[in-house]
Image 1 (tube, rainbow, N blue to C red):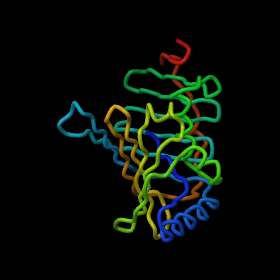
Image 2 (cartoon, rainbow, N blue to C red):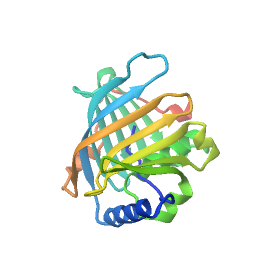
Image 3 (cartoon, helix red, strand yellow):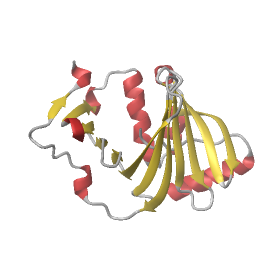
Length: 214
């Protein structure tokens, strides 16, 4: 899943200062891209699953590509989320204005937190459980304030480098005991992006489903 950035640090003056610096930097970030290694841990698996990928993010839009060759594409557009499975020639559309209240709506709200500029808005969505600096990475553990959101996502862990405040890791810990972690490298800020990255352009032989309307 998608990288989610964060809210206020209230444990310790040094962490609070680091977080304030990070938020100040975010006001100058209009886009970012990165490579990542995704690690999925499930209770039924002895060893976690690891998959490489790439991500491009700008306000109200992002594109995640998982696998080499690409197995899954998650495309966030202003009005919808599109999950594409190239091998299956299949896609799923999730209209954002039609998402009912509950875990799905809360999950989409978490995805929208990829370029935060308004601290107060973020604090309305998340509660900080802990914050600590390890190996020059400020790692924060967050919890959705929404009760329905916590039924789906138990905790979110965000790590960013304290030297340049670029994102380092994201991790979602789900209510069923599974987790999804992304370790990001080669983060590039404010580089022009090809608009085609965020366009749908599905081939005519793809099957498109709308799970929320079924």
